[in-house]
Length: 256
Image (cartoon, rainbow, N blue to C red; front, side, top):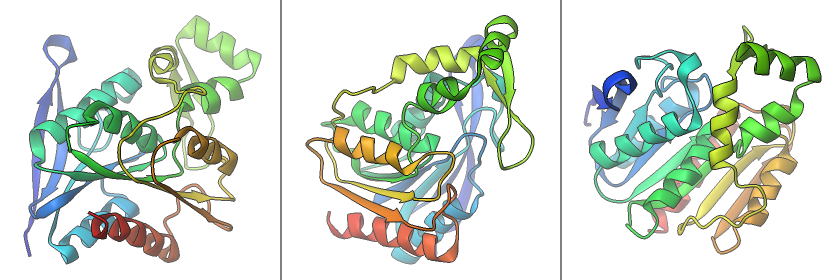
């Protein structure tokens, strides 16, 4: 069994330079790429499960921490969708070979769609598995959920703490919200050029299942499978959820 290598990739120049931590397992194509969620890292339950599946199937697997996350350099507060997307694309371009199945969780689902659009027509993204995909989250799931006091604090101070179910409040910056506007899908059709499997919990309070269903309607020309887990929460990290994730990835691998 191939061992996992811990690597660093330099992204950006000058004041924008940062070192992105990557964990890479050698193996055959299609490789698996993990894009994690907001404030998560590449050592979480689902990310490790993806790597374990790759080891069992002799597939290549690549995981990364965005800047300001996990083992990567940079401050979380400096992060934007553009910044984290640039890092995701750089890792795939420079640290993987051949077709990849990109697995994105929450914010990583939004980034995975943008990655697929970036590589469309180049044969580099062969499929997507999206777990509670938080598309347009900076607008629909952040800005739209803020009260007037929070919006005023964001405008005046440039940052506002937002409570969550996983620990300390998340610092949401004005830069994150403003930059997110560049990547919003709104109601436009999304062309990934590859099959998509979405896993969504019906009991998800962070990304409502209706949000994922809207995404299905926007994937007009793609082959889409939508799995709704009736008692599933946002994380979808229980053993039965991991089994569904493994099955979704296996289905895409076998279809290539």
